[in-house]
Image (cartoon, rainbow over the protein chains, first blue to last red):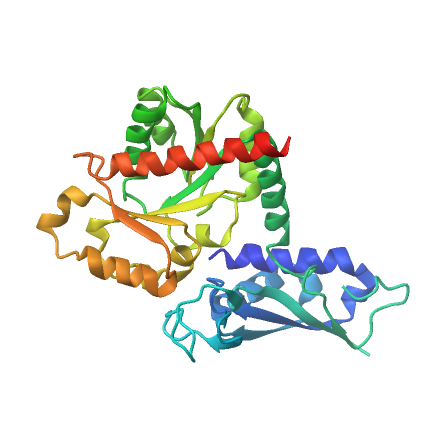
Length: 115
Length: 237
């Protein structure tokens, strides 16, 4: 979905947090994207390249995307399990759970600046 | 975020999730909508589905049946045209069209602006008819109390797991166009199983705006939620 607007949102967020001088030193942005976020990493990269073309300030910046699998928590077992094939059941007791603890992230995790 | 620096950022800066969530702006707006609706005792619904699954027709039938009992207003999102709002007005329900101009979903800010354009005084139920799309609208909280998703019998019973986020975030799934079921290779049981793989306890039942099947059940569901919402507000005042 709307990857270009997400890229704009990344840059706006960074512009709120850092000064223009600091952003000149920006080298790399690390994103965490849950696979339940409906965002396709490859399209995100393409959108980032497209935005870089039109906004010269970020030419030097590399986007790194880490995909996070879906995880749920089972109250009965007290364990978290990975959701495979979108079947939301506890891996230990097989009881259904919709207590999502990971998978919808759309986060800027780290930013790297030149030393 | 790390301490907003007095000195320039150098090296690697670890970000605080709360500040660096890319949908934080929408989530913030959605929370403000939720608060306002709670104060006013208005039940807010977000109706989602693919394009052409019968959202507007269902809402026409809903309006006809419940408009004497509740004050209902509808905000309807589409990429272009006023067509849906006109159809809803034809049955005597006040409706405002939100033209997104190409955007594939509604965002919280659009709802805030639309709410400013209508009179919410005395409204019991405010329904948002989202853009017909099972992908993007799933990720945008609009401050709703309940998300209701329609899955038309013509779409196929294998759709829920193709669009898992939408079905995961829904509170009720209606299998629409149930009058066509005898003519289609659509298994209600298979659809329910598919929905419950992603959302184990969700209620699912068939409706037909044409024959009226399930419409009373749906209206009862809505009536119960609207009354509960009104009570929760009076209780907290």
